[in-house]
Length: 81
Image 1 (tube, one colour):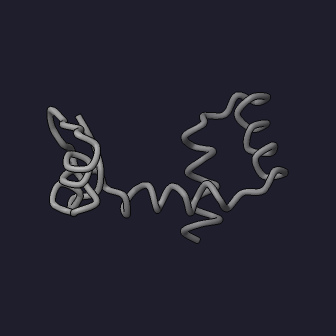
Image 2 (cartoon, helix red, strand yellow; image 1 turned 180 degrees about the horizontal axis):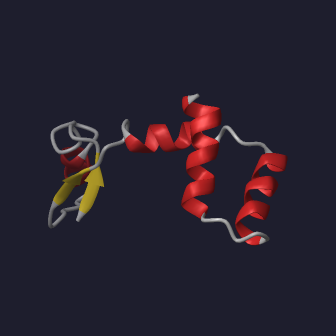
């Protein structure tokens, strides 16, 4: 099984190239969304600095606030807001 962008099964440097050049065959192919949720997650994860991450971790660890609520509040204020 192999995963990649939707055009990978037909690109000369994709599955055809891997088969012709390297003799590789695959039992299947699954298209993955390389430009959707991963791009969004990367943008969010790049935003907080070390001090912010420590603060968020402390809110979840010490007073035991709900991690999803802490994350939602931070994203709303710093990404969506």
